[in-house]
Image (tube, rainbow, N blue to C red):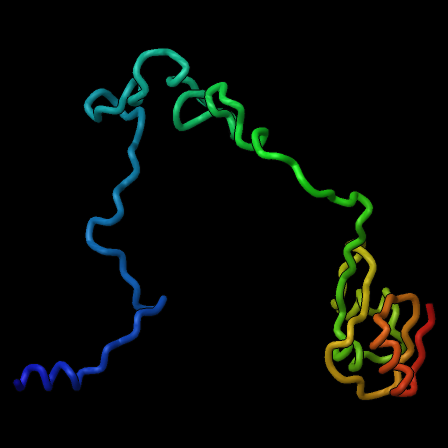
Length: 161
């Protein structure tokens, strides 16, 4: 009876990254190849004599061409192809409205780059309506969503394309 009461009183520590330990003998040392005849893996290093499986980059089991299925039609060719990928798609760099509300002066591509909000040559920037605008700002040469345009004009600022 008394032992059960003691077990109930002791706090159970939660499992976390700070208290993880590998279990005993769970990690085996790597096989050291080519270290003499006494090691058991010297000379041919456990690969036998010649043949394709003894070669570097062999095409036997455990190596070879990705998706090669021994002459069988590979899965990537057996499945039907669907859809379309537009090669001319433009991915915009997204900037939040509350990020530009703190900026001084006009908001342009150059000022956004200097502020670290976008990266050079990674596509055009577009301002999306996430957050509140606290003061009037001027946006030049940056795409804006319709709701951002409305909130900038409502705050007394303006958008120039």
